[in-house]
Image 1 (tube, rainbow, N blue to C red):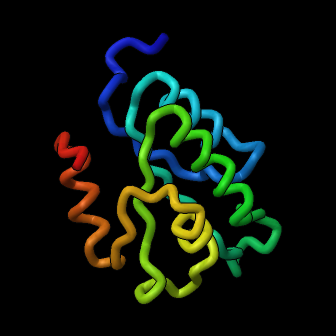
Image 2: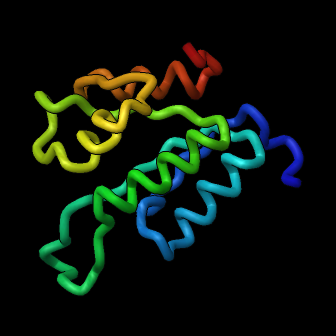
Amino acid sequence: MLMGIENKVALVTGAARRRSIGRATALRLAREGADIACLDIARPYDEFPGHGTASSDELDEVVAEIVAAGGSVIAQDEASSVVWGMPGAAANAGICSAILPLNQIGSKLVRVFAGDRS
């Protein structure tokens, strides 16, 4: 058990890909009681064509596991999304505690980081 991690917020990058350190980290921290903020890029890098990206199925899986561990999900809304794939998958699965425009996600995360879980 990780001491002192419960009710802390962890920002984890690269959590969607099935075989990633980010995913393993996010799931372990969620099981230990941390609130997880996941950030993943769902588009290829032009500068790094060999760099893999996560699929919406992979994101669905990790989100479901985090929710099962007691976490919650905030997704970007369709109107402000360039690509609605990953946020849309989470929204359509009915597992989001909030679906917000991009310009409201930052302030929501600040409130969550400060302890506001509403």
